[in-house]
Image 1 (cartoon, rainbow, N blue to C red):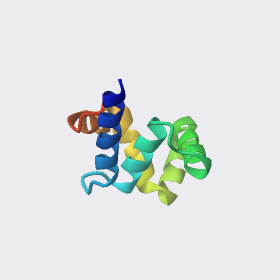
Image 2: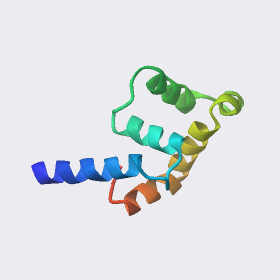
Image 3: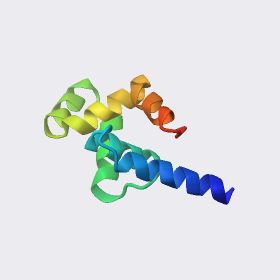
Length: 88
């Protein structure tokens, strides 16, 4: 169990330091893992609850974050994370 946690920590650290993921994708990963607080936690909640019109408005200020959210919902970001060894 301890080795599994250490392995996952190393995988997450590798992703967060990687240039293969956008800043928005990295922030969404941190949100999925419960590592976000304050502003970003509230931003992800707002994105998740926004209707199409409001999501478009949020996207004007936070395009990478909205793109990351949409990519995760479509399964694209999730598959890329799984390719890195994470299953979320």
